[in-house]
Image 1 (cartoon, one colour):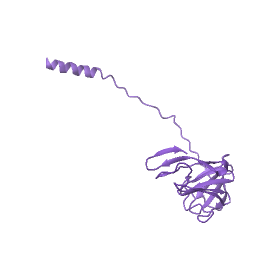
Image 2 (cartoon, one colour):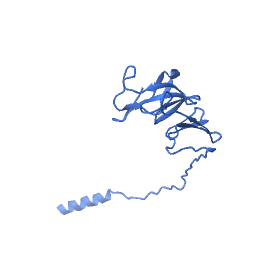
Image 3 (cartoon, one colour):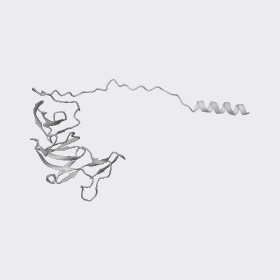
Length: 180
């Protein structure tokens, strides 16, 4: 009797399994396009060693500004004509200094750019002159202060003629993000 129960359960198990069918998907209709842009650098070199990590565009998408960390220049690329228009020299140190590393940039308007590193942000004109500094010391904020590990993430927004900054505040110690 015991053997019949095992045999019956085995038949039931195989009967409930169903029939497997192989389904094949046809991927032959998938297409990929790659957009390559060739820019005429003239007699200069456009340094893409760091890719487009520290770059920004004007609101009308006519110009790309690319930070060249090795030369401390802001390379202005005309997107419509696909050519390097100019290299704008910036100081690393001093009253107009951007610092040794530019982590991110954002255009305020067609004449002003915000450049940031881990110590602070600076509002610059497109002639290399620093107009304003924003220190990111954790005790310098009105109201709440920065916690350990907190910093502004890329692409903060400046309003009210540079008096107010909105952005994502990230904390690398616990992966928290908050709008401030």
